[in-house]
Image (cartoon, rainbow, N blue to C red; front, side, top):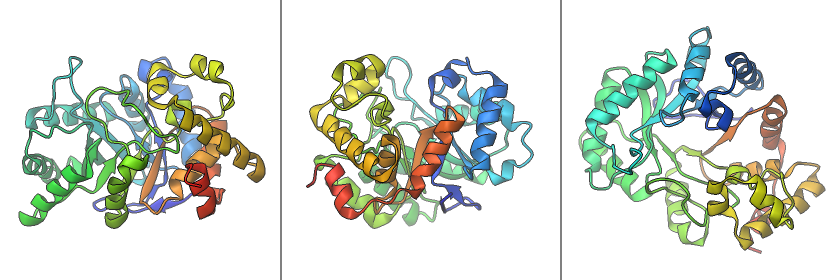
Length: 323
């Protein structure tokens, strides 16, 4: 396993993150014993970082039920999120919602603190400095260690951190944008979402490269697009196998070409398409952690195996249609 460090978190964090936003866990259909076996398999491989959110239905409850009996909680990096918009799209980036969501998450997770807390969405109408003040208050109370934003733009993160520097406060230490070899061409989610790939996002990538802010990349495999569940020339199967969000976000000609090239490179390197896509993300000159669903022992092994896949700069450019 490969690890990185996050300011405010006093333990290393695995570059492969156990993601909990998968259907069986969110719906509550996965048996606690099955989940426990999966997460302990992941821990045995060196994965010590877990991603969840208030928005992920029953996932937090299941994680918490397992965590209540896990005796090495201090060895884990637990990250959760709050302040997601309401079902009608109304922003919930308020001090009250932040406090309520965090306290609910701590209760469900059976822990007195989370290592990383992220605001699931931003609301640009709220001054970034106000949000920094709210998060610092929760940090002083011991409920969160590091914090940051999911789907925040670099401009807003910089505003928050400039305010923190000017007022001797703790800044954002983590960001969680969408990042994948498959470019998210259309936002499939509620509210404004932040993505990094694609020609139009070069300036944002340059900001992350310059600042090296730890980045928890989500939808690394394009919600299944880059898993190899269908061939690059089989559009009918892609339409059948992918959910609506994946079809809206990723089913575009350039992405099918990226998939075709990943197939070619996977065959050359005796790897899977998914491993090529994960390796592409983790090989960037960015401070990346890959949020990945770990729904079976085989998938956990595959995710971890991607760390051993070496890609040359030329191969990375070729995969992304830059050559």
